[in-house]
Image (cartoon, one colour):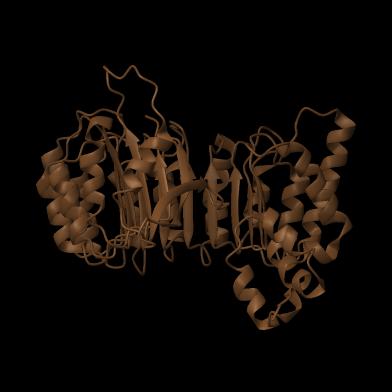
Length: 466
């Protein structure tokens, strides 16, 4: 009996379509028939994103907002809008027309919950006014360099946000941050501030924000060399429920982990902590630092640990005993283990893989001549889903090597649960091809395919620059 698309029960379509990750594939499904279109088109427009590396990204911005402004029915489906590319080399009149198009399109997105607008210099006052009129907006990620394109005081009108992410904020935006955080503090659960090496974010500023962030769940401060344990300590000590996630990256070399540990212990600040990202300066006395971090995390129900050195060098060696203690305390819960810009021994890596029973994601750095030994350690992790390996550059490495060949060498030794593999700047999906041998026995071999998930791989979200 021959089945057609019309024979597929309608109640199964949402379940099937939820597994489709590429927008292009969802667009194809919209063309099958009316029933497919009804379910697929909602998913196609639920999350709309344009990245700078997309082909003709700037032209797509224009086409997108033409659609959203002219088709309110489609705009109603948009829940998450990410504009990370924007055409700026336009005449004054053309740019004005584009802004008008954007604002009309945004106003039609009446169910918009999350917006990211990160292209430097592209955020204008009309766009912010339109976003402010979105009744369900909860999350806002923006490039904080206002460049005179808008009055930063308008940000204080966004008073019901649960998540704020500021990238490279200007002095004017930072100046209004206390009033903004005060306005949205009762609903704010997630705050991220990302800088390169900004001296504008200070302990004094964080101390002024702390009383308004007592309900915060997640905090990430990146690239702020004037921030020490004092500012972060004030935030965690005034928090009512305890953070679930914290990221402290490229802060002041004067950050005293011993003092921070005492603050957290006094207030039981990490009693709910499931995720932590730490960057360690090469000048840091590692034995003291590892002892303090071990103590800091001793009572946390930790699931994600990410540690890296601010300077990429093989000389940064964390003692094996640190990893062993972490695994002993948290191995039954750890789902992601990320170690970058620092050397980990094969023994410690094997211990992580063999004793972290629910480990799904593992990111490490190694040399190519150790690749087979490292891969054999991966084989001990029976639930791995994603692996990423960064390589130290070796002085005697003159031959051009294929990262895809390196990735295949790794996955051939890994459990069949692995579905994603990365080497340096490349990431692939892993699929299993079924083959038959001379005895008519079926077996599978791994093959690499294009990475299709619209989400940026975790290891590429933030440049780990010094």
